[in-house]
Image (cartoon, rainbow, N blue to C red; front, side, top):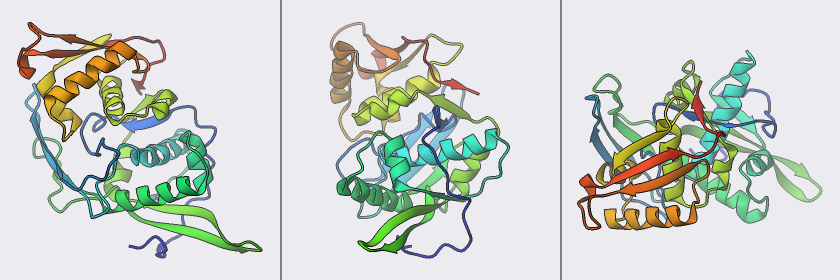
Amino acid sequence: MSSEAQLPVQPDLLYSALHLPSIKNDIDIISMPLYSIEKSRRTKPIQFDYRYSNGQHITFTVKGTSDGIATIYDKDLILFLHSLLIDKLNRNEPVSRLVEFTAHDFLKWANRGTGKADYQRLEAALRRLHGTVISGNFNAGEESMESGVHYIESFEFRRRNTKRGRVLKSIVVQLSTWTFAKLTEAGRYISMDRRYLDIQGGIERRLYEIATKHVGREKSRFEINLQSLHEWMGSQAPVRKLKAHIKRIIEEDSLPGYKLRIESPSPRAAAVRTKIVFIKASPRLAYAR
Protein backbone atom coordinates (compact mmCIF):
# COMPACT_ATOMS: atom_id res chain seq x y z
CA MET A 1 0.00 0.00 0.00
CA SER A 2 1.37 3.40 -0.90
CA SER A 3 1.91 6.09 1.67
CA GLU A 4 -1.05 8.05 0.27
CA ALA A 5 -3.49 5.10 0.32
CA GLN A 6 -6.86 5.69 1.94
CA LEU A 7 -7.49 3.84 5.18
CA PRO A 8 -10.92 2.23 5.53
CA VAL A 9 -12.08 3.66 8.86
CA GLN A 10 -11.53 6.69 11.01
CA PRO A 11 -8.61 6.52 13.48
CA ASP A 12 -8.67 7.45 17.12
CA LEU A 13 -8.44 11.15 17.85
CA LEU A 14 -5.05 12.72 17.36
CA TYR A 15 -2.76 11.78 20.23
CA SER A 16 -0.30 14.05 21.95
CA ALA A 17 2.63 12.03 23.24
CA LEU A 18 5.14 14.50 24.60
CA HIS A 19 3.94 13.91 28.18
CA LEU A 20 4.67 10.15 28.13
CA PRO A 21 6.94 9.35 31.09
CA SER A 22 8.50 6.12 29.80
CA ILE A 23 8.82 3.80 26.84
CA LYS A 24 6.70 0.65 26.66
CA ASN A 25 8.17 -2.45 25.03
CA ASP A 26 6.72 -5.93 24.54
CA ILE A 27 7.97 -8.17 27.37
CA ASP A 28 7.66 -11.42 25.39
CA ILE A 29 9.66 -10.50 22.30
CA ILE A 30 11.93 -7.69 23.49
CA SER A 31 15.06 -9.85 23.43
CA MET A 32 14.38 -11.49 20.05
CA PRO A 33 16.18 -10.23 16.90
CA LEU A 34 13.11 -9.00 15.02
CA TYR A 35 14.84 -5.89 13.65
CA SER A 36 18.10 -5.26 11.86
CA ILE A 37 20.67 -3.66 14.19
CA GLU A 38 22.61 -2.18 11.27
CA LYS A 39 22.24 1.38 10.05
CA SER A 40 22.98 0.34 6.48
CA ARG A 41 20.27 -1.33 4.40
CA ARG A 42 19.95 -5.04 5.14
CA THR A 43 18.20 -7.26 2.61
CA LYS A 44 19.51 -10.62 3.85
CA PRO A 45 16.76 -12.25 6.00
CA ILE A 46 17.24 -12.63 9.75
CA GLN A 47 17.06 -16.34 10.62
CA PHE A 48 16.50 -17.25 14.27
CA ASP A 49 16.34 -20.85 15.52
CA TYR A 50 16.94 -21.16 19.24
CA ARG A 51 16.06 -23.64 21.96
CA TYR A 52 15.94 -22.08 25.42
CA SER A 53 16.96 -23.89 28.62
CA ASN A 54 13.28 -24.26 29.58
CA GLY A 55 12.67 -26.28 26.42
CA GLN A 56 10.97 -23.48 24.51
CA HIS A 57 11.90 -23.66 20.83
CA ILE A 58 11.55 -20.44 18.88
CA THR A 59 12.20 -20.18 15.18
CA PHE A 60 11.33 -17.38 12.78
CA THR A 61 12.45 -15.53 9.68
CA VAL A 62 12.36 -11.76 9.15
CA LYS A 63 12.33 -10.60 5.53
CA GLY A 64 12.25 -7.14 4.02
CA THR A 65 11.68 -5.63 0.59
CA SER A 66 14.23 -3.85 -1.59
CA ASP A 67 14.00 -1.03 0.99
CA GLY A 68 15.54 -3.40 3.54
CA ILE A 69 14.44 -4.97 6.83
CA ALA A 70 13.02 -2.63 9.45
CA THR A 71 15.82 -1.48 11.74
CA ILE A 72 16.08 -1.12 15.50
CA TYR A 73 15.92 2.64 14.86
CA ASP A 74 12.65 2.21 12.92
CA LYS A 75 11.41 0.35 15.98
CA ASP A 76 11.30 3.70 17.82
CA LEU A 77 8.05 4.35 15.96
CA ILE A 78 6.56 1.06 17.19
CA LEU A 79 7.68 1.90 20.73
CA PHE A 80 6.08 5.32 20.34
CA LEU A 81 2.76 3.78 19.27
CA HIS A 82 2.95 1.14 22.02
CA SER A 83 3.54 3.86 24.59
CA LEU A 84 0.64 5.94 23.29
CA LEU A 85 -1.85 3.10 23.36
CA ILE A 86 -0.77 1.68 26.72
CA ASP A 87 -1.03 5.17 28.17
CA LYS A 88 -4.63 5.31 26.96
CA LEU A 89 -5.36 1.81 28.29
CA ASN A 90 -3.98 2.79 31.69
CA ARG A 91 -6.40 5.71 31.69
CA ASN A 92 -9.28 3.34 30.74
CA GLU A 93 -9.71 4.96 27.35
CA PRO A 94 -10.63 2.97 24.24
CA VAL A 95 -7.94 2.14 21.68
CA SER A 96 -7.90 0.78 18.15
CA ARG A 97 -5.41 -0.39 15.55
CA LEU A 98 -5.64 2.98 13.79
CA VAL A 99 -3.50 5.66 15.38
CA GLU A 100 -3.17 9.26 14.23
CA PHE A 101 -0.26 11.41 15.38
CA THR A 102 1.92 14.27 14.16
CA ALA A 103 5.37 13.60 12.76
CA HIS A 104 6.64 16.51 14.86
CA ASP A 105 5.40 14.85 18.08
CA PHE A 106 7.14 11.59 17.23
CA LEU A 107 10.41 13.25 16.25
CA LYS A 108 10.48 15.33 19.44
CA TRP A 109 9.56 12.28 21.58
CA ALA A 110 12.35 10.25 19.95
CA ASN A 111 14.92 13.02 20.57
CA ARG A 112 15.39 13.59 16.84
CA GLY A 113 15.63 16.67 14.70
CA THR A 114 12.67 18.14 12.84
CA GLY A 115 14.30 19.11 9.56
CA LYS A 116 13.41 17.91 6.08
CA ALA A 117 15.86 14.99 6.25
CA ASP A 118 14.30 13.81 9.53
CA TYR A 119 10.84 13.70 7.95
CA GLN A 120 12.27 11.80 4.98
CA ARG A 121 13.87 9.25 7.31
CA LEU A 122 10.54 8.83 9.08
CA GLU A 123 8.81 8.08 5.78
CA ALA A 124 11.53 5.54 4.93
CA ALA A 125 11.03 3.91 8.35
CA LEU A 126 7.30 3.60 7.72
CA ARG A 127 7.97 1.91 4.40
CA ARG A 128 10.34 -0.61 5.99
CA LEU A 129 7.96 -1.34 8.87
CA HIS A 130 5.17 -1.91 6.35
CA GLY A 131 7.31 -4.06 4.06
CA THR A 132 8.99 -6.28 6.66
CA VAL A 133 7.40 -9.71 7.12
CA ILE A 134 7.89 -12.04 10.10
CA SER A 135 6.95 -15.70 9.85
CA GLY A 136 7.61 -18.59 12.18
CA ASN A 137 6.91 -20.06 15.57
CA PHE A 138 7.15 -18.04 18.79
CA ASN A 139 6.03 -20.50 21.43
CA ALA A 140 6.86 -24.16 20.96
CA GLY A 141 4.32 -24.60 18.19
CA GLU A 142 1.46 -22.88 20.01
CA GLU A 143 1.78 -19.54 18.22
CA SER A 144 2.76 -19.87 14.58
CA MET A 145 2.68 -17.38 11.74
CA GLU A 146 3.41 -19.42 8.64
CA SER A 147 1.69 -16.88 6.41
CA GLY A 148 3.70 -14.00 7.88
CA VAL A 149 2.77 -10.75 9.59
CA HIS A 150 3.81 -7.13 9.22
CA TYR A 151 4.49 -4.57 11.95
CA ILE A 152 2.03 -2.16 10.34
CA GLU A 153 -0.63 -2.90 7.75
CA SER A 154 -0.85 0.55 6.22
CA PHE A 155 0.02 4.19 6.68
CA GLU A 156 -1.20 7.47 5.28
CA PHE A 157 0.16 11.01 5.22
CA ARG A 158 -2.62 13.54 5.70
CA ARG A 159 -1.83 16.92 4.21
CA ARG A 160 -3.55 20.28 4.05
CA ASN A 161 -3.35 23.18 1.64
CA THR A 162 -1.76 26.39 2.88
CA LYS A 163 -0.45 29.56 1.25
CA ARG A 164 2.97 27.88 1.20
CA GLY A 165 1.58 24.79 -0.51
CA ARG A 166 0.59 21.38 0.83
CA VAL A 167 2.00 20.64 4.28
CA LEU A 168 1.92 17.50 6.39
CA LYS A 169 -0.91 17.64 8.93
CA SER A 170 -0.65 14.18 10.49
CA ILE A 171 0.21 10.52 9.93
CA VAL A 172 -2.25 7.66 10.35
CA VAL A 173 -0.87 4.18 10.97
CA GLN A 174 -2.88 0.99 11.02
CA LEU A 175 -1.07 -1.54 13.21
CA SER A 176 -1.19 -5.19 12.20
CA THR A 177 -3.54 -7.38 14.20
CA TRP A 178 -0.47 -9.22 15.57
CA THR A 179 1.27 -6.05 16.74
CA PHE A 180 -1.94 -4.68 18.26
CA ALA A 181 -2.74 -7.97 20.04
CA LYS A 182 0.75 -8.14 21.52
CA LEU A 183 0.62 -4.67 23.01
CA THR A 184 -2.93 -4.86 24.36
CA GLU A 185 -2.36 -8.21 26.10
CA ALA A 186 -2.90 -7.36 29.76
CA GLY A 187 0.30 -6.48 31.55
CA ARG A 188 2.67 -7.93 28.93
CA TYR A 189 5.03 -5.01 28.61
CA ILE A 190 8.16 -3.55 30.13
CA SER A 191 8.79 0.10 30.93
CA MET A 192 12.14 1.29 29.61
CA ASP A 193 14.16 4.33 30.61
CA ARG A 194 13.94 7.17 28.08
CA ARG A 195 17.73 7.17 27.94
CA TYR A 196 17.31 4.27 25.52
CA LEU A 197 16.41 6.79 22.80
CA ASP A 198 19.81 8.43 23.18
CA ILE A 199 21.70 5.19 22.44
CA GLN A 200 23.24 5.55 19.00
CA GLY A 201 24.68 2.10 18.26
CA GLY A 202 22.50 -0.79 17.13
CA ILE A 203 24.51 -3.31 19.16
CA GLU A 204 24.18 -1.13 22.26
CA ARG A 205 20.43 -0.89 21.74
CA ARG A 206 20.06 -4.67 21.49
CA LEU A 207 22.21 -5.21 24.58
CA TYR A 208 20.12 -2.67 26.46
CA GLU A 209 16.89 -4.46 25.48
CA ILE A 210 18.30 -7.82 26.59
CA ALA A 211 19.41 -6.31 29.89
CA THR A 212 16.00 -4.73 30.37
CA LYS A 213 14.26 -8.08 29.92
CA HIS A 214 16.62 -10.31 31.89
CA VAL A 215 17.91 -8.04 34.65
CA GLY A 216 14.66 -6.92 36.21
CA ARG A 217 13.24 -5.93 39.54
CA GLU A 218 14.18 -9.23 41.22
CA LYS A 219 17.57 -9.94 39.64
CA SER A 220 20.79 -7.94 39.85
CA ARG A 221 22.62 -9.84 37.10
CA PHE A 222 22.13 -12.05 34.07
CA GLU A 223 24.70 -14.12 32.20
CA ILE A 224 24.69 -15.75 28.79
CA ASN A 225 27.41 -17.38 26.73
CA LEU A 226 28.81 -15.33 23.88
CA GLN A 227 27.62 -17.75 21.18
CA SER A 228 23.99 -17.55 22.35
CA LEU A 229 24.19 -13.78 22.73
CA HIS A 230 25.44 -13.50 19.16
CA GLU A 231 22.38 -15.45 17.99
CA TRP A 232 20.10 -13.16 20.02
CA MET A 233 21.66 -10.11 18.38
CA GLY A 234 20.71 -11.15 14.86
CA SER A 235 23.94 -9.62 13.57
CA GLN A 236 25.64 -10.43 10.27
CA ALA A 237 29.05 -9.71 11.83
CA PRO A 238 31.16 -12.61 13.21
CA VAL A 239 31.21 -13.47 16.93
CA ARG A 240 34.72 -12.04 17.41
CA LYS A 241 33.51 -8.59 16.33
CA LEU A 242 30.69 -8.70 18.86
CA LYS A 243 33.19 -9.58 21.58
CA ALA A 244 35.44 -6.70 20.55
CA HIS A 245 32.47 -4.32 20.56
CA ILE A 246 31.44 -5.46 24.04
CA LYS A 247 35.00 -4.84 25.28
CA ARG A 248 34.71 -1.28 23.96
CA ILE A 249 31.37 -0.79 25.72
CA ILE A 250 32.92 -2.03 28.96
CA GLU A 251 35.83 0.39 28.62
CA GLU A 252 33.54 3.34 27.84
CA ASP A 253 30.83 2.29 30.34
CA SER A 254 28.31 3.36 27.73
CA LEU A 255 25.24 1.23 28.51
CA PRO A 256 22.88 3.37 30.63
CA GLY A 257 21.71 1.64 33.82
CA TYR A 258 23.79 -1.49 33.28
CA LYS A 259 27.37 -2.70 33.28
CA LEU A 260 28.83 -5.57 31.27
CA ARG A 261 31.56 -8.04 32.15
CA ILE A 262 33.30 -10.76 30.15
CA GLU A 263 34.13 -13.96 32.03
CA SER A 264 36.29 -16.43 30.16
CA PRO A 265 38.70 -19.22 31.18
CA SER A 266 41.25 -17.87 28.68
CA PRO A 267 41.54 -15.06 26.08
CA ARG A 268 41.11 -17.61 23.28
CA ALA A 269 38.29 -19.61 24.85
CA ALA A 270 35.46 -20.71 22.54
CA ALA A 271 32.38 -18.50 22.38
CA VAL A 272 30.26 -21.12 24.15
CA ARG A 273 32.69 -21.04 27.11
CA THR A 274 32.82 -17.24 27.28
CA LYS A 275 30.15 -15.60 29.41
CA ILE A 276 28.79 -12.09 29.03
CA VAL A 277 27.43 -10.82 32.34
CA PHE A 278 24.85 -8.03 32.60
CA ILE A 279 24.85 -6.25 35.96
CA LYS A 280 22.36 -3.78 37.38
CA ALA A 281 24.10 -0.43 37.79
CA SER A 282 21.37 2.11 38.46
CA PRO A 283 18.13 2.35 40.44
CA ARG A 284 16.42 3.75 37.32
CA LEU A 285 15.65 0.34 35.87
CA ALA A 286 13.10 -1.09 33.52
CA TYR A 287 10.59 -3.43 35.07
CA ALA A 288 7.63 -5.56 34.09
CA ARG A 289 4.21 -4.42 35.22
